[in-house]
Amino acid sequence: MAKKILIIEDDQDINDMLRLLLTQNGYETVSAYSGTEGLLVHGKDIDLILLDIMLPGKNGDEIIKSLKEKNPVPVIVTSAVHDVRKKVDMFALGADDYITKPFHNEELLARISVRLRNNTSQGGESKLTYKDITIDKDDYSVICHGKQCDLSRLEFDLLAILMENIGRTCTKTSIYDRVWDYESSADDNALNVHISKLRKKLKECNPDEDYIETVWGIGYRLKK
Image 1 (spheres, rainbow, N blue to C red):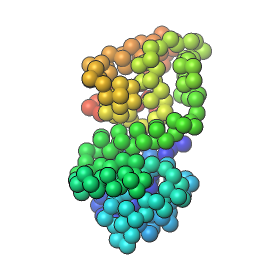
Image 2: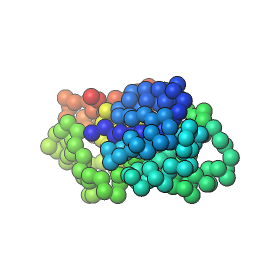
Image 3: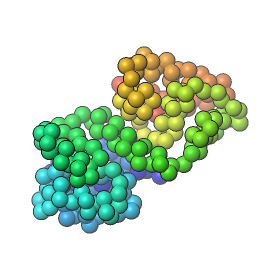
């Protein structure tokens, strides 16, 4: 099931841009244009909130606590304010992340992916299935086409992040953060090499299937 993101942003153009970006990347969205409306539409079906600070009526910093009380999902603050003290204040109020405008779409998508992953890792499913592949995150086992597929830790993590995001493109930034934790060894060449090894091992299990496709300049995703 697609994750649902609540966009609380009073600027119509920015709200529309965010909604289009997110839906193109496999998310469901709900839009609100004021703090009061955001509180009204927020509920148990929301998985993450994008919250602008400067809103008509109640400002973003005034409603974070109330949003968390209704459903304690990750809140990513979006703001043109670069002041460090403001960022610290927002974290103290309960914000999980803070991104300044204007931001790059890839960075926003990566931050969303990380926050959703961190939020679900505490009680998420240990077993994931895609086509004829099943992975178990508890014992790092992979079954592909009825055969045991022996993967390295990096290859397993690559497959896991792709299977956690079926229908969405995993950006290189989000993969680096998840698999390499931004280590200096993370670069395009290292990623390409490990993706190639993963593809080869899956192909050995099922020669008739290609599971992973490249989204040039952006990242990778599982074939639909």
